[in-house]
Length: 230
Image (tube, rainbow, N blue to C red; front, side, top):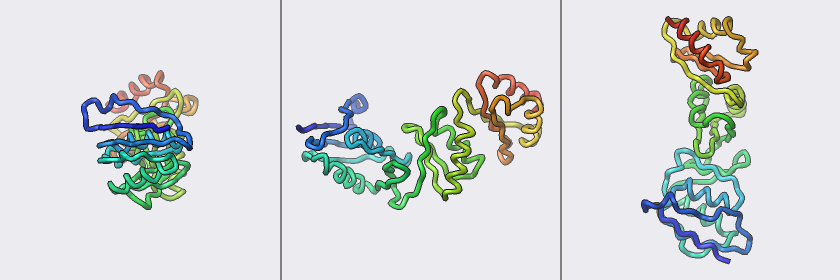
């Protein structure tokens, strides 16, 4: 059996094109008649067909594969064909943390962390601000990319655990009248953040407060911040 997949993402109807997403049998063959397909789209299809967890680095996601195929490819050769197509545009596949990571660096050493309740592209810059770690977020897969030593990865995991909590939201508030650290002390006197299982962190360099707490209590906390900042 031959699965013939035709994709031309240079056309206006490109995004509406649908392709079967199922794991291929060993005996099946794929004819990849592709033109101008983003690496992110191609990796999604390869993940479906091969059962491998493919993740694309945010900087590589919109790089375009000009052409793949149209010669029929057996399932066992599909991975090699895809690697060759990536290599032609300067991309590489590295295995890390149970994922196959597509990036522009052959020696890329990253750890991928799954984000559950918040958006990875929103939480990544916040973790960078509070920790100084090299962290980026991929919105499509909702995962964080952490570059660094094991100690730095552990620190990123701890910050993610503090901010990614079911039923809570993360807020960033600028303050003007007092040092941010003073706000933390005052807010902890007014509210029992421990009882709320919440977190308030001072970003002294940018004069901001990072708050994670239940959304239902946020209006009270925000009102207190406004009063203290008068």
